[in-house]
Image (cartoon, rainbow, N blue to C red; front, side):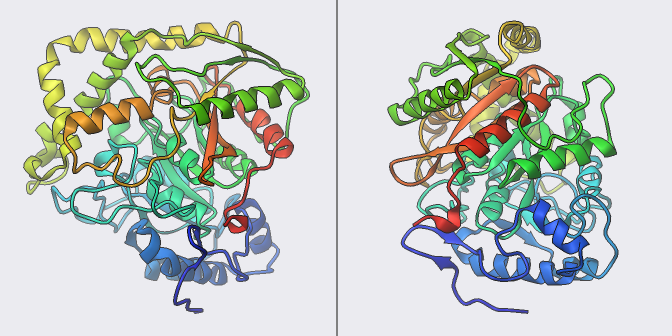
Length: 479
């Protein structure tokens, strides 16, 4: 196996792209090379492991390296659209034989006995897992940082956050270790790290993919399972492959999307959220630039209101607290008898405490959050797509969203930062983040597109069109 002593980098960028079996290929092209016999699965797996070892110290994105098993699996036959393509799985779903630690030090996870339902679907596409990627504790934060451990670093500039909660997966895809990685999204956790790391991040409609065990138990199923990739075609092919494994009969089929549509869309533009925070100037400018690009491409673009009112912010925050309360109160049963809620981080403890103070509001909160399904759907009687920022301000430096600060300070920052993404989780609507622009610091800056329930096809067709019209910068060309 080839060894590399230091990652390929300049003063800011950390990446592992090099002339090996992976090259700079996306998952689609890599799978084609494997299928044609131009490279073997073992060669690709060895190259991915070498890359992971190369950037590992700089990025800290792997929670569990399962390299020996990956090499053993590489010599076995593989089937699926991404047969033999290396990947990682986020460390909050079960992979047989691997512990699921949920980014927490409050318990010691034992190896899972079987793959979870969604992992079975994910692996059915043919991908080969190298291990587990890091996430913030229980996926509650928008930055992959910890109380007493090294943060995950953004490959575009290690001083900055990679987003979260799928921050480890996003860092590994953006840096070139793997071309596709598992991600899931309960408040923006596919789209936020995709935005921070310059990737394509599609949150599917509620029910589009197989729900994992915990997803099924929630009174409002806000979590969507998916993937982060470097190209629109990889995301489109992944969705088509996932649909071949399981198609929800209550949703319109997506089928394989292979390019733009000739249909011109009516696009509503939202620049400010329903939170008290104003979108920052750099992000505002990027949304207007995307709107101008859409208009130049022949789409009808106009400003529109948010489909929900300011009460949505409190409602979603209380539900966020409810999730932490459930874990804090039932951790010994859910995670193991050694679970210690006092060992959880400031955000987890603060969210649970906030919910306890608001527990009497639960029936009203659930009623109003369920109502967002209809409120969200109504706006798509007038528009085909809604354009907004993915995040309300540019990617922060590490430390800004650290769980070491007080809960109150961190929580206010998180609400202001993640102002746009939670609506799609509460309503169940699909959304995609695309890294169309860049910040003055050279980091990716994304635009966010929402569509009606079940209309991922329109989002993918539009994403293809924008990728062709304004190709986003590649990390290997940065610096």
